[in-house]
Structure formats: structure tokens, C-alpha cells
Image 1 (cartoon, rainbow over the protein chains, first blue to last red):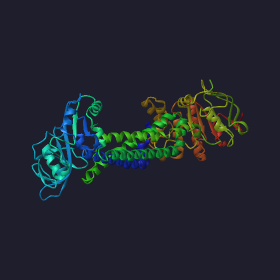
Image 2 (cartoon, rainbow over the protein chains, first blue to last red):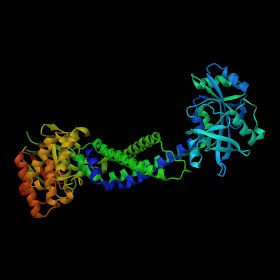
Image 3 (cartoon, rainbow over the protein chains, first blue to last red):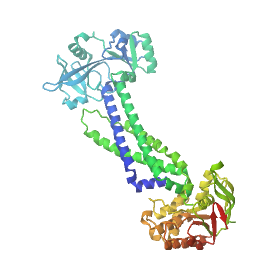
Image 4 (cartoon, each protein chain N blue to C red):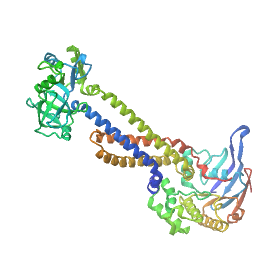
Length: 363
Length: 223
């Protein structure tokens, strides 16, 4: 192992090719992961901030918030299901809004009844809590946005974080204001007072079991856990599986790079390994040296790649939703190290087969 | 007790009609402070004999005893440990670890054995001083001459205080004058320590440094 370390320190140039390739792969992995997290967050933030454990849609909506309708009577029926501790309404309109003299911004106007982890209790009618992404569009607290074709005025009462929905900035308003926006933008979709698109359900019990009970006892409803609802959002599951596949393939490429590089290193050192075995080195000692080198090269590549990615993330335009998270970085680091370990392990067989007698030549 | 006893040792590669006898009923005894020159033409079995004596190869038949260790029948793991602790090797062309200094090349042996590092360092420095390399301890092989490299290799072979040192053509890469100097040094070092040695060489001008010369032809030893 010490031999491996010494070679790495004294001949870093030998490992430049593998280290460079791995650094580029780390940058790619971190950017892909950051892009996935950013896109997912932009699509699903409004659901992630919910304290409720379940979201109930009408059955015919096929798990779509926009198509769903939950009447006040249905809310009451859900409330009476054992295990349900609280029920509140939630509705959304995807629409444009603007300040006088400014460009239109995309909004997801939520009507809601109860506070959640991020959003305070509903403000008075005509006011709203805006997602901080609107700050980049020039909106400020105290400004009034004109929402929809009828320019329904909504005064910004404060900022909330991480509440975007399908990449549109959340604007959280009183149910009456939401109804007004809905009616003026889509008269055909007008809802009776007290009717929302979905019901948020809190329960101290196992959410999956309570969801089954609601589905059984309240006909015509489709209860989902928040995680299920997030995956049911348009494109989210497809987006995640696509990115996961690309990231998996990238890890495989990283493994191949390490495997190929260290296979060449071993091939080049067969003579030296023969001599070391002849003077008493075990295959295990030599393999440990190789693994040490692979893991250290990968760790160095991760450190360098991480720094470059941080630099790149700070200069990418705001439209590119790269979101670097510590959890993703840790997972990528573990993945790269494990990949390096496996990649270098492919050369173990060749090391074991090195014959110590090969050190002695001649006749 | 002799440093090496080989009784009726055979080494056969392959089987049936393809069988090649590399060593044929070889019997050799080397006393505990004896230096033996082993000479013979290419393909005569010198390397095979040296490899079997050093635990690099297992004999097909016969008994091999190095000091008190009867090594025929040792497992691969036991042979590795045996080589690490009881035998020293000097290879053709030195074969040093290129990225280690002269001192570190000697310390590799003690590191593999897991010995006391301070003691090993003192021993390595003393050996290099004896070999006239006190001023070269921190030089890597690339900055050593051919003769200096071979002297470092001799130091490495003596690092574990072996009972038997095996030299494989130690002068083949050196000119006559340098070769003689290295042979003189080998004699001085092994004799000074009372260590047994076998020196494989095809250069008969070097054999007079040994106590005795053994010839090998077609795998058979000629006394």
C-alpha cells in the first residue's frame, strides 16, 4: 500500500490521464445530478413543502390536479375516515401575471386553506405570498401583480421559498382570490364556493393504510401519498428515469476508464510485480497498492471536479435550473469511489497470476 | 547444518510426449558459509535450479531444504513468507523499484515483513555505507550507474539477514572491470556475514571468486 502511495506522490504525471478523465466524468455527474435536482425541484416544489401526508384527487382526474374536483361534501366524508386528523382544500391555476409596464411572468396561483412547512396561513383576499423566484423578475414585496386576462390584482404580502410548480413560480392566495382568477381565466372551469381541486389530508397513522381506507370509504376519490403525487406530476417520472439512466451509464463509463487505465498500469508493471513477489510481496499487498491508487485518484478527481462544478454552477444562466445539493454530492462521491474500487479490482486476477519465478531470467 | 540441501530434485514441465525435463535428479549441498558458482550454457537449467532453491518454483520430485526449512510441499503463501524472511535475491539487471530511492529499495523488504521501521532504516543505511553508497541513499535508480544499481540490489538481498542469497547473472549487464568489482563485493559481503550464496553466471572469468564451481548441462549437475 505504501508503494502505491509513494508512486502516486512521486509520479503524479503517470496518473494524469486517468485523473483528468475521471475529473471530467465527475463534473458531468455532478452537473447531471444538479440538473435533475433543479428540474425536479422546479416541477414539484409546491408539493414538497406540504406537511400533509396524503393528497386526494377525484377518481376521474387520473391523478391530475388540474382535472380533479373535490366538493365540500367529499371533504367532509374524508374527514370522517378513521385516522384522518385534518383536511384542507388546494387548487391551482397556471396563468400569466404582470406588473404594470413589465413583461408577463408565468405563475402557478394556488388557493389553499391551511399553512404548510413554507407557506403561512392564507392571506386576506387580494394578497398573496410569492415564490422568491419572482424576485429575479423584478417583483418586490408590496408590488401588485395583475393576474390573468381580467388583470385580477394580487398584492405581494411576502416571500416563500421552493414552491414552484411545473417550473412556474408559486403565488399562494386566499381561496376567494384563487376562485376569482380561475373564473376570469377559464369561465368553463368555474367551481362552486368551497370546491377545490384536491384535498390535503394529515394523519398521524400509516399514510398508505389511511389512503386505502379513504379510497374504500369515499367512493370516487383517488388518494395518493405526497411522493406518489410528485411522481404523478406530468413528466416528473419520465424526467427522473431518463436522468437516472444517463447517470448510470456515466458511472459505467467511469468504471471502464478506471478498469482500462489500471489494466494498462498492471500490464506495464508485470516485471516489477514479479520482482516484488520474488522478494516476498503477496498478491494481496500488490492489489492493495493498486486499489489505494485507484481510490486516491478518484478522490482527487472528485475534489477537483467538485470545485470546477461549483465554479460552473455559479456562472450558468438562471434559466438553467442547476441545483447542487450536499446529498447528491455525497452520493456521487461514494459512487465514484466504489466505481474506482470495482474498476481496479478487475486487474486483481492478472496480479494473482504474476509468477514470482518470472523475476529470474536467463537459462 | 548446510544452508541448502537439494536431494534428487527433478523439475518437469508439461506431461506425456510434451514433457520437458528442466532439472534431472539434481543433488547439491551448499555449506552455511559457502559461495558456489553455477555455470552452464543457456537452457541448461541454471535458472530452474536457482528458482527451486529460492522457493520461486516447486520441484516435481525430490527434497529441498534451506537451513531447517524443508520447502518442497510448502503452499504458495508459505513460500511467499519463506522468500520474504529467509532468502535474498539479486536479479539480472538489478530490477529496482524505479520510483524509490536507494534506501527505500532496501526498506521495501522490511516493509513487506512488517519489521521495526527505525531498526530497518539503520540497517539499510549501514548496508549502503558498506556497499560504498552512503552518498547515494536518496538517489533513485535513474540517478545511479549500472554498478551502483547492482550494489543497491545486493543490499536489498541482504536486508532480511538471509540464510541463502541467490544471484542471477549479477554481472551480465556490467563490463569486465565493473563485473569483477561487483563479484569482489559479493564475496566480501557474503563471507563477512557467513551467508551461503549461489551465483549463476555464464561468465567463467567470474567463477574464481566462488569457493567452488558447479556445472549444469541439460538439467544434470556435473561436480
